[in-house]
Length: 88
Image (cartoon, rainbow, N blue to C red; front, side, top):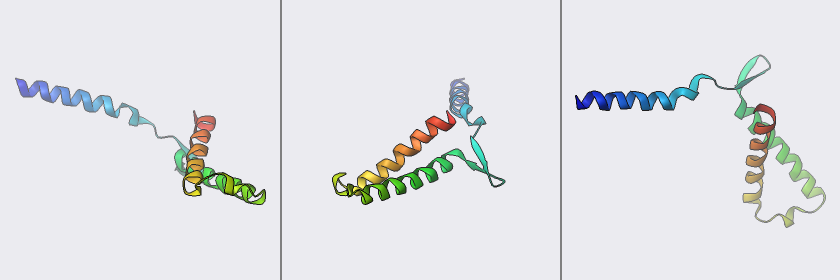
């Protein structure tokens, strides 16, 4: 009797966890479907590259602090921002 309760609880827990797996957002790029997070990440890397070029051109890159933290943080920020603006 006790194992049936454990099994039923396990089935309910797994069902609750997997309910959001029904739809994976994707976008069509040149006839192939890509996950949206890949599109956001690629666009964020490109935007960060242009921001870096702008900072170097204006000689402000030395003012941003440790660049090993600044640019990855900028990529993450752009990715999340693009996700929120375009797909949510």
